[in-house]
Length: 384
Ligand code: DP6
Image 1: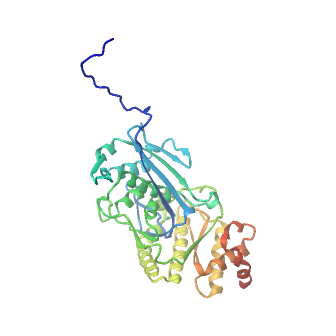
Image 2: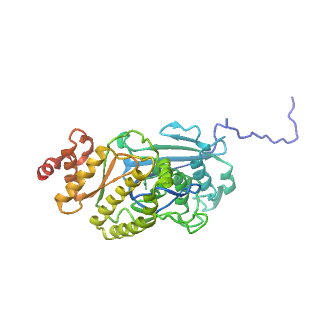
């Protein structure tokens, strides 16, 4: 056959079988956080906004984080999510997941690369092209399996942060990314910042764009603060936070009083305490707020019991310790489960661990880590 002289154009369509699809990806991690002033109760369930402001500490250690890789490609045929290596099959239709993916993607910007040789800028993905791409999300918790900590705060914060990086997203108002993360899980908005973080309830704006998280003080401001986690049980909680708070809003008069009268004052007290590094005031308001949160659970009808007998014995132990010391050296707080988080200062950690070992001898071995060499000494010093 003789070669033809007329020109043809060969088109090879990109399909999912394309051996070299272009995949854009970004990996980000986010910390878990533990609230000192608790969020409990939704003002608006569509926007997932709270009836009261809250304040938390981000636990910045590498072993208490969610690490998330978000990737996008025109070769992906649907949005998919894997948690700790296992695919979550109904993820793409979940309202919470959709709010985060669609919310961040709507803020995408053109992806631009700069040629290092010439300095010339080239748009490799336009804003509109991002909106036509599906995402694959892979997320891992670095929490020790027995930590008994909720992972949704760190998980949704890492999801939003990874998508922001992937799409080069830009906020149209300050705090918008935290407003997107709260639609994944309320407490997640606080995990987008390190240090001490307040979630302002908002509600003055009709679209709830004022319900955002902001940093009160960064992680370097009060570095002496430590969190000790006492795992009372690593079983999954019986009543989820979402269901529990909806029952409390419907039935607890104490909750409405708390949101209106108590929490605004406590937010001021704790923010002042953090600024002044006043552990006495920080610890007292933290314990009182944990107690009131669990009182609203008891005031819910039917009542919700998150703390158990062991949790209550931890409360007693901490009050005994502080009475012995003549000052507040440790403060407990409990979320929607029986596990205790104890806040203390670095100079009291050994003493506090010695106390835990004394009262819970069989269970505490895993807790003591690097502090073990000083424990015998500290245990001797503790006489009640
Ligand atoms: C007791 O943030 O898990 O830990 O918004 O429904 O996902 P949803 O709830 P979630 O509730 C956390 C409740 C809490 C208190 C707190 O972290 O402030």
